[in-house]
Structures are given as structure tokens and as C-alpha cells.
Amino acid sequence: MDAVGAERTGVRPSPGGTFRGAEETGVLWLYTAPPTELSRPGLTHVHLEATAPEETPVALCRLRPGTLVMNPPLSLGPKRTSRAEADHRLGLGADLISFGRAFIADPDLVERLRTGLPIAPVDESAPFQGGDRGHLIYPAYQYTA
Image (cartoon, rainbow, N blue to C red; front, side, top):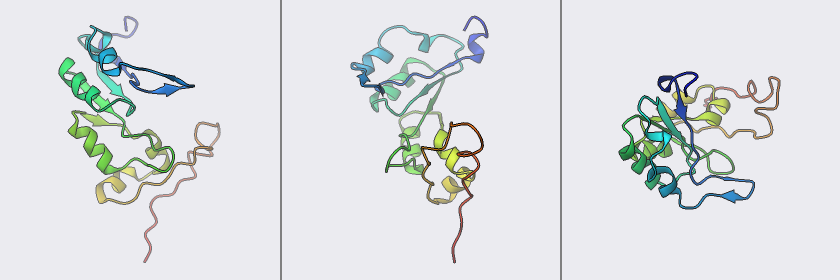
């Protein structure tokens, strides 16, 4: 943070996340009990992955007064991001919701959320592989008569 300043820095922890078989335990204590960089004055935001147990964002909201950004649960596999999931995270205390993959698969995501249209699945073999494939293959919602 010293290089760019706290006012231009956010933190994105993934409490409760798993990676290659490693899994955190004691998530709530790990992210809320010790004095951490998460409560440093001037930090612009904390961005939590949806891997966090629901009590973690509530505790973080109490710990620091800054902006809390959350992901709805990842849209991998059969369960996809939804407006209801986003609203639920807002109800837990999030100030903003990020939609990453859903924005890749839905160029009209804001309209879909606003009107209750379904959110398209992401072709997980396509994004982030280089080139246009995976970023330009998704159409806007197609209404049928």
C-alpha cells in the first residue's frame, strides 16, 4: 500500500476458499479477530469471495466501516449466479456485488438482473485462454415469440 496509498488500495481475501486441496479452518476468527490490514484506515474496500460463511461478512461489516464488495456464489457448475443470491448478499451487509463470470457470459447482465431474465451459463473452457474466444461468443438475451 505504501507504493500507491491506502486510498487507492482494496483487499480481496477468500475466506473459506479451497485451492488444490488446501482449506482454511477457523475462518471467522482468521478474518475478524486479529487486528489486520482489513481495518487499516483509508483502505478503499474489502472484496470477499462467496466462499465465506455467511457470518463472516456480517462480522467484517462491524469490524470496519469501509465498503464491502461481495461475489454471489460462483457460477461454476449447475448453480449459477442469480439476482436472489445478489440480493441475499446485500442483505448480509455488502455494499456492492461483483459478477465477474456472469458479465462475461451476459453482455446485457444489468438488463437481465433488472427484468428477471435468466443468466446464461459460462463456457468454462473459453474465457481467459487468449484471443477473442470466450469473450465475444455470448449474445444478448434472445426473446422468442
